[in-house]
Length: 163
Image 1 (cartoon, helix red, strand yellow):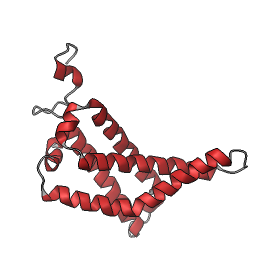
Image 2 (cartoon, one colour):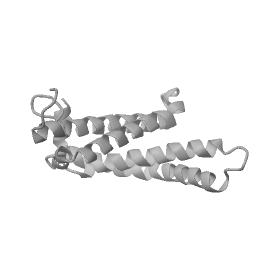
Image 3 (tube, one colour):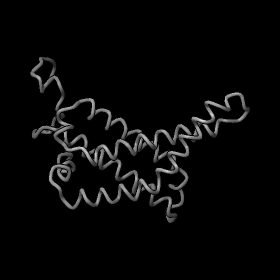
Image 4 (cartoon, one colour):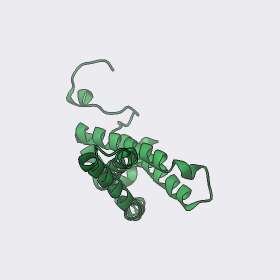
């Protein structure tokens, strides 16, 4: 199943075009919030450490930085071909970690929207989380062998070890 999720990234299908359009729309909507949050956290850390109540700025900074990492990982997955993920363990694992951070950040950031299902923020949160999970599955599927096991560097190079 995960290999099927990776299929649109091998051939230039309409699915990939739709994902790119959704990525552009999502980036336009969410990148300013994430960048502002990361900026406010850095400013609070550098200039307002001695101030009494900067906890909110630190939290905004952490969520903003994690959101930026998640978006960066999503764009890496959308723009980089499956073959590069098969060859590079660093690219594969950094993208997987970035997507997991992005999904967790979306769940935390949009936590209040989960309560009120009809709100627009709920639907935005749902789309972001579902796209993140889909990209995570496609990333793992890009590295899978035909028999369903994930390809690791030890197996690729012929090194001996436990199966």
